[in-house]
Image (cartoon, rainbow, N blue to C red; front, top):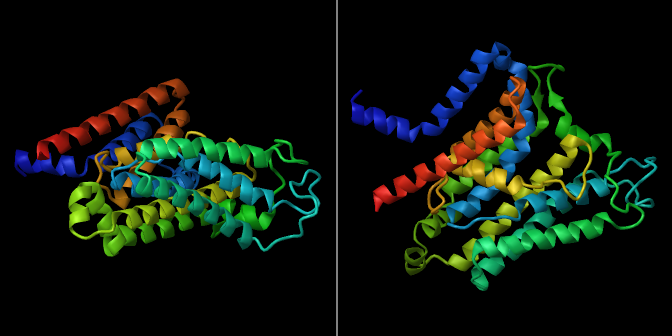
Length: 336
């Protein structure tokens, strides 16, 4: 392999090389990190983050950004959890609410996220508000709405707990015998969502339009793409994914508060950028986003596993993010 081909290979697969080196480095420190049970735990803990990051990828590929995702996660977690408590739990959010079909609050949570996404898309596409500002405003509004709901009597800002097992089983249940070789339901859901998003990105008109808008919005408009309609649809899909992530996070942890999802938006954006989604728009893949999520999952779990201080973990994550953005900008400038 020539030097040029080697350089091209490294550039093309840098994200996966970093992930392998990261796992290898931690495993050298403690070989137990390669146990199948550790991989299962990492996948379990990061499945909802993968779904949220895939939602953020939709927006980033169009050349925008979405700061509201974390607060949407919190809203939908609280909304679904508040309607799925045990009937004999002493501090029920709705004391007189009859037992609902478990799918109803889940659907309502996803729809709530979709509505927030529609609002974001409409503000960006129709009012021409920059995505950063539009979603910053939505982030604050959604947190305020969620806090008001969370503070209603008789709950009065108490953590929502005592969730029904048919709901929590979605987040903590699994196929197969109990042990490291079991497959959590939530991981399967994340895989199915990833496959659906891959199809949208690569096999649908919406996906092609999304890349075109992110590559050059003026050229997309001239070519006949209805930019506003596509943007509203893209933001709506992203919001629905955030809603699903919030519902699954409540199911996984067995509770919810209005602070759920705090800073998730930054983790989602960071995972996308590290995974090769261009900050300039028009570039991004599902495997890259998932690899970015895994890198941060390995950092969070692996460095804690070998006893590295959480403060050093933040420094390492920050350096990786800056390096990824710098690499992305360098590639962008080289193409111009």
